[in-house]
Length: 246
Length: 225
Ligand code: HEM
Ligand code: SF4
Ligand code: FES
Image 1 (cartoon, rainbow over the protein chains, first blue to last red):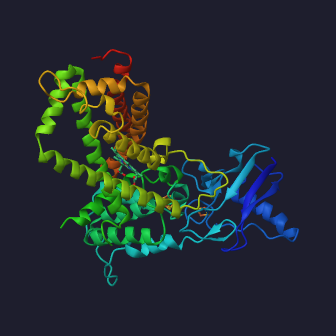
Image 2: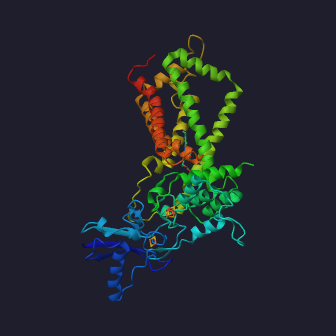
């Protein structure tokens, strides 16, 4: 099939950037979205033009590097699918496709579709860990964890840190990302001792990084390629309220 | 970081003040429905309130503070959210947010304007002095005749229209706000959210019909002097 692409091109962080039109001829329905972009880039390179810069790594939906808004939806809007796992068979011959980077003040654009997501690392570093000795290997069952708690924590830990929740949010809030970190650790016995300090530090970091405030649009859950539930934001809220109590 | 600066702290303040405002709105609707008991109903109710004396003023100041906090933090949060969002996607499709959730600041500011008008109209008797209770003769039991004031007011089409329109904005604000404060307090385990959202819309609809029934029944002459 033949497609028309409108791709966000921006030379660097200071450049204003604009959409540019490209043709993508002979696209195979079995290609992934990023493979289609690879083909477009190959032509650009051969003709001496600057290829479209985009982030990617595993291309199998687990690393969280790919980060592209396709036709107004982060990762293209297919349920629980990263854009690297989005296949061209979901498009029709002759379609126009708008391809843009995550746009949020906290995610400055580096080049074209590549944004700097270190703000998410700053939130993680503020409290998304447990402090413990790393010396000897502890007994496997020294700390018992119930099956429901383990499942709950694993559901929260599914987050791959891609930032689609921020890109989808009308307020550019990173509350789903922060919520699942807080919830994951608060659900486990190892995370309890630092729970109060953690929720405060991580939500402060969220604000200081320039993300917006959550107003419960729930758009993040719809954008998340892992379908992370906003119940983890409710859990963060509970943990925050608990942190205020003596 | 202070509670009043924290992103979640302020969200909780919005929810607490929102919940108090919603509670007030429910009690206010119950009180207003005494209009269906005629002059005896609402005039007696109004007299009861007035006889509370200083308590009324304590309550008014409390509501003013709650309303003020809700408005100030609502505006501050909205401005921050706009600053955090460059908002220059060429194509942007929202699938989970809705009209009500996206227009909270608009419905909120319309409600603020309405509350100012409502107080000028029924509390301070400034906007339509000719039909205000303070200018009307007292009723047979020498109580201020609130019933006549309400009926004469809502017989004017423009006044009824303002009240009905304002209640549509109240519906929008509460249809998102009700489930929002429940999520903010943390009472959502995942599957409960869809039910909460339905309850929220239903609750807002009850408020809408409850409030607009009064001007509508009056304008159609079903409730009359
Ligand atoms: C009639 C009175 C009002 C009622 C009953 C009411 C109720 C509520 C409720 C329950 C919420 C949800 C709180 C949450 O959990 O986040 C809310 C949010 C909000 N309200 Fe109001 N409100 C009223 C008036 C106003 C006014 C006058 C404004 C004007 C600025 C306003 C602006 C907002 C905004 C911007 C939000 C969203 C903020 C957020 O969720 O963080 N409201 N309101
Ligand atoms: S919560 Fe979902 S959308 Fe947000 S960073 Fe994690 S995986 Fe990506
Ligand atoms: S490239 Fe790793 S998730 Fe898409």
